[in-house]
Image (cartoon, rainbow, N blue to C red; front, side):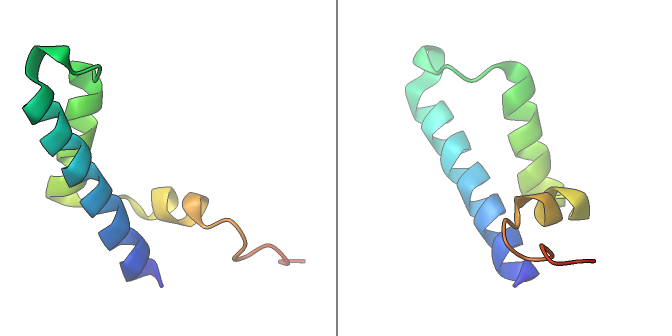
Length: 62
């Protein structure tokens, strides 16, 4: 499950970077956002980033 979420996050980042490259100067991404996306593609998401994105899992921890 975690590997699927990591792969989805990386593929989404790649898509955003491709769109940014295609739009050129008309892109609305800042340099910081582009750097974060590049880090995500290069190094992968951190574990807390993945666990925070899981909406329903771990809900009933009492």
